[in-house]
Length: 446
Image 1 (cartoon, one colour):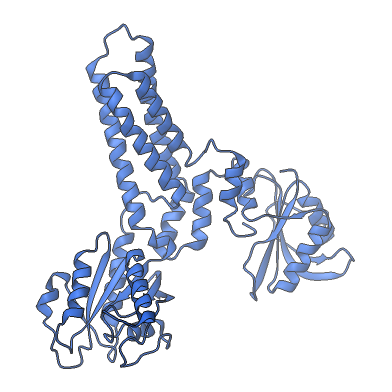
Image 2 (tube, rainbow, N blue to C red):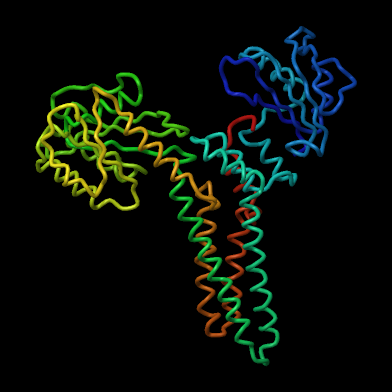
């Protein structure tokens, strides 16, 4: 923690500006050597020339100094905003390293902010996920977390559990006295409310995970219904081969595309049918696997062909899907209709055409993604957070059994486990090794 660290905080590549960040006790002295300025005013944008260790001019840049403790990390921070391109940024970085700084590890700036009490783990994870967010809705949710929304839930839940634990400890100390029934009922009711709230939060977090990671959308159907044409239309270029030959697509094709304010992962699958071809069978197996992994299923049917056993297999698959969002579309609506649409009436199918475009389908998709993002429920943004609240819920449920029978020592034990689990979301009891692993997932310079 005493070392001064530095890293390039902007993405690699050509850009208008690049930012080099410097944090630690020697940040200000190194900045003076690089800029040759002695009077550096905190939070003031200094337009200055920057020089390397050989006293050669590197660039004219903006330099901003944030004095401890009023900075992101809680330490002295200096940021150099130079002209874009990696050459200039790399030379500034090399210079500050030559003057005694060391290259920061991934996530080390945020880790120092946490260790110095500037942020808690909920805010740190929100920062990390905000960089990866795949929708405007996700950015709004994560911005709330950075303002402490999840931390407030953790603190309130922890306080509620500690109050119940305090009642239990008092009653254990005065075991010879009769325990008022209304106190036990009050504790039980409070725990039921917390269990219900945790259940809602976990369900909402699973349902809305695609807002951050990008919804995975699988296009399924029998061969030659237009799955590859749909993929190409959404991508606006010929990504998949389109042919009248059944079985042309033999493997899954995955691409990212923007629908409204959401970036989704679109998967074109091999046509699902019975096949003796070894390669095609592997592709069909991968199609079925993609259906299992997907958040949204787009089932395409050919309205110009009579409903057959292959279509029946797709409908049967849809009937057995659980926890999936389904969109059913009848393609080739510009041709003579031979498909019995009443078979799909329960799925509210929409008619589309590769020749006329898939506007109606993209509108349905955008409406679906927007609806998933609706709601004010708190969202857990990492597997670590979800597992912590699930464990807390389990411990609370375990605590209720001894509470009902008056075995308060066992009740207190399980409640303490719940407190530890819920607290770990923002202030874990874990070792520094766990912190290193978590913050190591951040990008360099953050």
